[in-house]
Length: 248
Image (cartoon, rainbow, N blue to C red; front, side, top):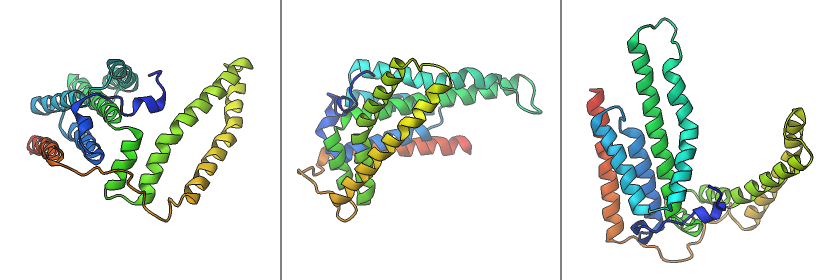
């Protein structure tokens, strides 16, 4: 998690890197949707979610430290809800069944949240920043949407670095606690807004609002890309079937 933001992109060494960039993006979206649609409370849904995450990690093969770091991040995000939701009293509801229902809901949130974090991390590891631009340019998306997404990725590193500089300056000025910290953070916001304005002006000068992004190299889909997409869609269809059957 201490790696540079751009170093995380494309750091995977799995067979997924041999596919076209747009295929990798579509596969990541399909894997994420599969984990979100499949009911985690059922045996079939839980096995499908675990199998999808395991297959996606094996295909992307990100570094172990990256998996552990993002896994810990997922626990920080979703473990508090898992621990606290079952004990939240509901108005007019009593008995052991209420606690059991709260436990099931919080467990589903934890499982699907962790899976979403891991799949997103593996997708980042499978796609470099240049591949992201390449894949977005080949997908049927509006040009301005692709340009904004690419600029978000590029500018995140700069904003993170600037945030670290602000935090270091606050620490040097002994503003680690108290109301002065909030005022210093607010005082630094105009610089971040000014940076966003400069990025927007640069995008306009480069014609992002007028023309579509140019594709720099050939990334045509081959047989392996179509086979992978069929498998991903089959997994997504299976998740939908399990949920529909469970509801019925």
